[in-house]
Length: 209
Image (cartoon, rainbow, N blue to C red):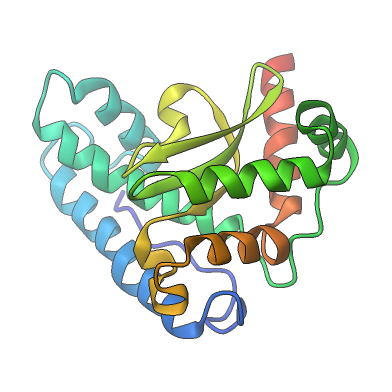
């Protein structure tokens, strides 16, 4: 099957004033679409053609050390996957914090919701260069990790719950060099904790199986 650009899930102006319509439209229509188109072109005629995006990410990650052509496939497939996850990590009027079992786990691992927010903002702002800041579940514990360029936790057997894109194209039109302001606004106003809770439940279910 051909990899498709997933629906954004909200209007281009839905995340304003944190993320402008111009930024969201450019990010989704140009950057995300570009990764999707390139991965489709790169896998054509290979054994990865027709597979789901996550499978392409995982298999190319496994093979890239021995097969140089897999590096380009991984970079574009992982960027397509990461972007799709980023859109789902955001929602209008988000940022209210975790509830239920996820809230208890956040408190256990970060001390409090405020402790998590401070740690997440610090990690995302301090990440050097282009990349991503993730909340992941690993072995029943929550962790904040960052990845450079196209790297993704799913290639490390971690379960992502939320992500913030810290490539410059995610924020530069709105914030210029002020990454910290962008990160703080996303954490405080846009993170979709309902999406995080669903991912947390799935991770718990997978451990129990």
